[in-house]
Structures are given as C-alpha cells and as structure tokens.
Length: 138
Image (cartoon, rainbow, N blue to C red; front, top):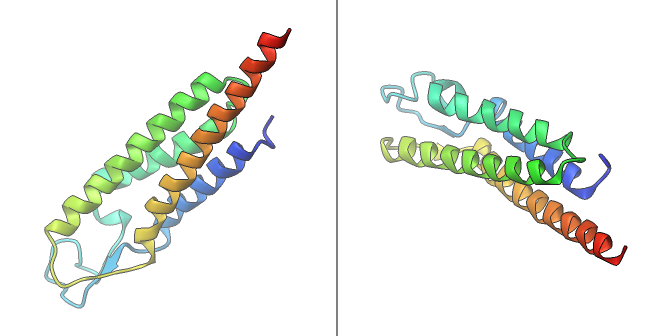
C-alpha cells in the first residue's frame, strides 16, 4: 500500500535530495577557485555530481511506487544508499580541493536524504518480516 510509513520516508528522501537544486553546498568570497566562479558551489558546478543526484532522486521516487514488490523495493533502497554514498564521496573530494569557504544549507540535504532512506529501508524490512510471519501462520 502506498500509505505505508516507508513511502513517506522515501518521499521525504526524494524531497531532501531534490532540494540540492535550490540550496547551494558552500559559498566563498574568493571567485578565482574552480567551483566558485559565481561565488557559490551548487550541484550545477559538477556534471558527475549532478548525474549522481538526478539518478538518486529518480531511484528514490520510483521506489515509492514499488510497494507491491518489497524485494525490489529493498534493492532499490540499497541502490539509493550507495548512490547517496557516491554523492558524499564527490562532495568530500570537491571540498578537499577547495579553500576559504563556508558551508550552506544544501550540505544537509544529502545527509537528510541518507537518513530518510535508511529509515525507509528499515520499515520495508520490518514490513517484509511481518508478511512472512503471517504466511507461516496459514
């Protein structure tokens, strides 16, 4: 059923990850650095990061509607978690090359998306366990 708790967590994860298109990751007064040509570092400054975010948002959104196939839903949640891990890796790599910057609100979006996806995974697993226990009683 689409009203399950995991669907809400996946929707919140999709929203959190989608918010990186609105909020920048960091800002800097030094506009000579690679990512700060406009003064802010956002998702549009790195093509690989953009691709990872778009793929993750699509995977989380599609996972919402796979409530009838819990095994596939679990696998797509794991895929989303690995993709968010890739986003973290890209951000760490990008920030290691930068100097003189301050973090902005966008840096919290992947963290929130990661936490919401983990919660969705836990509740999908819990739901699957409940269904399997009911099958044993028949």
